Length: 196
Image (cartoon, rainbow, N blue to C red; front, side):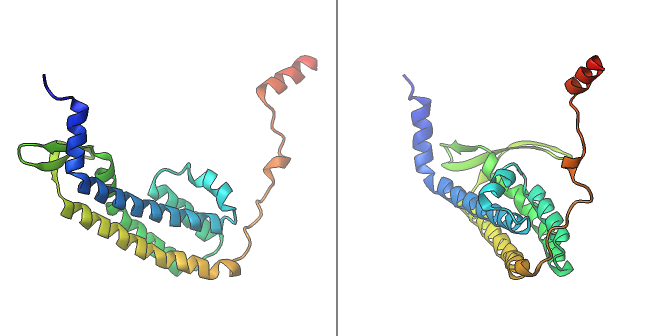
């Protein structure tokens, strides 16, 4: 009788624990980057972090977070130099984000014969890729280091926002108050028509 597949998987995961630990540290560093961007969004939107978290938790991609932050930076009239730095950061972090996504979302497989780990890579951006690629500790550590570098680069933008936040102009008022515009639901309109 063959060994239970779950026990086999558990034993292999234990054997390759270092890989899982390194990927966990990489994921944690990325989460900190997202958190710092969220903090800047909350600061510039002048919103409590608890309420802000309700909003930013709905923003799934780093690119969308950066779009949101850029809009707020322009709305709050942050100096153009800092906006340019965020645009340059966006360009650098895009490639890092793609590598991070592959590292986090591609399943890890184990080759017992070669004693090596790999990842099933499935992508289709212009060219279809379906393969098992070797996964090494060095590769994971290199990506972790790159994420930490991106986090450090964003820190300069974060500190720039913190340094000017109290001197920024208030958020402009809307041209018209949307609550002053009457909105009728179709049922209300039909009800009024029936009564009229």
